[in-house]
Image (tube, rainbow, N blue to C red; front, top):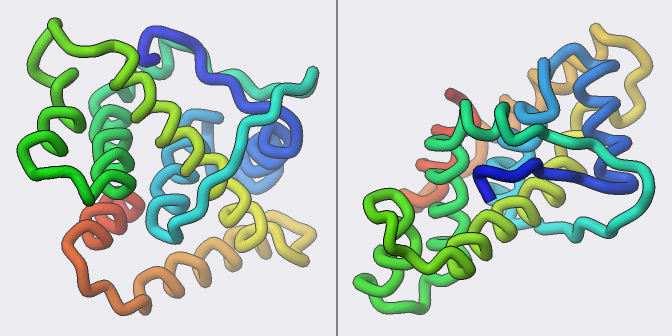
Length: 170
């Protein structure tokens, strides 16, 4: 997964393009992808990547520059969705590709696909929160500020949420 392009389709591609090109808050599709994944995990919202002709592509060379961050968030997504597993199995499955070349590639691809589904859900949230009724770049920035303040004011009790929120704020 980290050696391949990541492609978003349809409405998600349109939202990514708008967030990157029109709001000036994100420099690359990759930035929208990572922020979307974090927001999706924080708000527990996933989405589906329905294939259409309309697409937004994050090229593999960009993915490789952020591979550790994507590995971290994908592992976190796996932990969130599989908290019912024993601690030993959970840690092995979540982090096996970090330390060994002898890991189950299919199992780890699933965690990257899981993070991508969180990213799609999070991109929907980002778009709604940032764009909403706004019509200019100043309004987008103000809406983003309000959204960050909204997240900061959330009651964060659990360490997993703190780790996700830390990723969004960094």
